[in-house]
Length: 254
Ligand code: NI
Image (cartoon, rainbow, N blue to C red; front, side):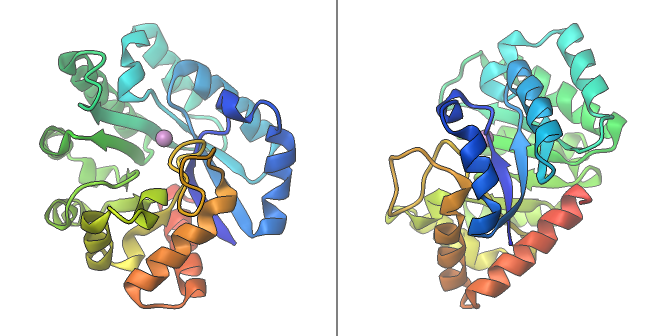
């Protein structure tokens, strides 16, 4: 069974067929799913999904692009949810300089606060970092993220940057982008990263892999990602599925 380490099934893109889709995952070889909160509302919906579906686990956090909504009450609420059964990580949290919305100091402030939250509750982190490689690494090193553990989701940086995260014993979330023809740098990074440090993910409903690029993504597309990882690593498809499942189970204590 493939372990889906990053999806947003709370998203309205799934309002029409969420139940049908989620209940069909098992027969398509998809096992456990981490539904990742990106806003406070998304976290609330994630909690509901966790209760409904035994195979679905949750991460509680606010995406950098949504941090304008955070305040002390919001952070305290997140803290409370982290002690629930089946909440397995704090995330997704980080920095996004592609949009720079809200402004960078606001993003940094809540990234730091949510890393501190992860330390208080003893959970690993799910990191979102886009066009912010240096600042993300600086903050993570300053806050000793290597003691928290976690995954850099939708890894999009170079092989050299991968070495820094390997030094912190982090995992790398690899998704649909790896199947894109223009993702040469990422393919190089995946060749370099040991399979024992890779998690499979979709970021559904976003970033569907080839041959479904541009359409709504779902965990049903994970075999395309696993196939490309297997090709790049020169190992059998089944080995990619098994090793990445074990990696995710170890990281999230499932
Ligand atoms: Ni995401």
